[in-house]
Length: 220
Image 1: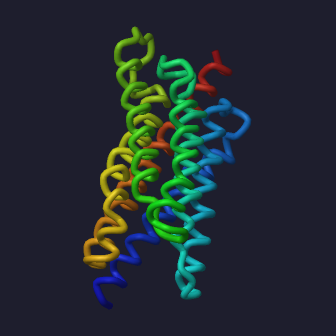
Image 2 (image 1 turned 135 degrees about the vertical axis):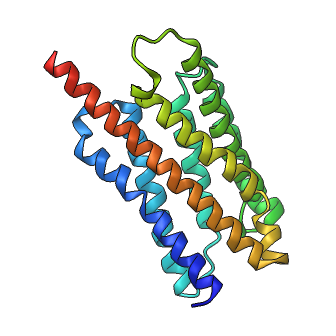
């Protein structure tokens, strides 16, 4: 087994972890808020794109255009999940719309079609990390009658922050790594997916906490 085979195995196993929060979301669907349902749709969307990406890869079809859909998904979940909870008014929606407009500009005017949109993709992840960080600060500042560990929001915020912070840094250099060092590209791609798996675990904990909180309310 070569190094690339090992990295592929780690990548696929880490990606498969997303099935846990998706499965929990489906199971507890009736108990979820609109924001939490948006999270489940987001995770389902990136899983579908990942499957399509893998199929194209093994069919020897250039698949870099799938990064456009990932970027749009990140922008959408950032505006939807945090639009009303970070205290910035319509700014999350405005910023997501601005980056969405700049996406085709980068593709057509800079990198070319079916090349990775490193800049807008990195900015989209950075915005998501920024929203999550702001939400965490607001959560810590608020008086809470319930322990923070019992609140699902903190797990969602930590998950999004991890995904956004790491992806914002690694995705910016993807085109550079592809052109100069495939070893670095595969290493950082695998590292990012491993961090995503950790985020998926945090989302899962948040969903379980939400379910237990709902059960306690029904009992009381």
